[in-house]
Image 1: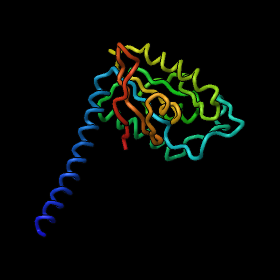
Image 2 (image 1 turned 60 degrees about the vertical axis):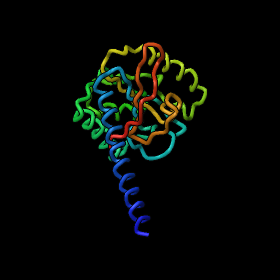
Image 3 (image 1 turned 135 degrees about the vertical axis):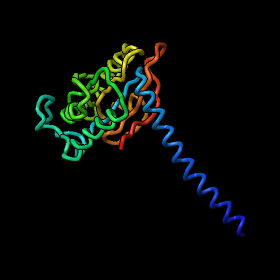
Length: 192
């Protein structure tokens, strides 16, 4: 009986420390990859309450869109702080034209933000899905594998379509640029 308790305790300790070490190694590998360049970090916009956008959405009018709340603005700033604290340098920052993405990208405080329409949401406009993804994949494949990290701030649907991953607001995916193929999925980015 004491042997079973001892084995169970050892197993519990192994899994607890094993998973902790794995998480630290994974984060360390992601940080090292981002520091080395040749990668794209696709971040889902920070927290913006609600679901979808109002029917009267206008791309150039933030009052017609779902926007970041105070928590989302703070989350964006913390993501930028996390990147800087890990000595991650950025070559370019691209954003969807939606205000919640532009605000997230600007609040990172990592450099000039360029609008990239191929990053726009197609959640409520499914007819834009294939043209946007085709353009975005071409844009990604045109990027040099020798440059510093590229950040793209976009939407859940875009990240899921490109990487096959579902991420929470403020999280993202790291993609490695390849000369022979447009990219490969490296891991989930979750700075909190």
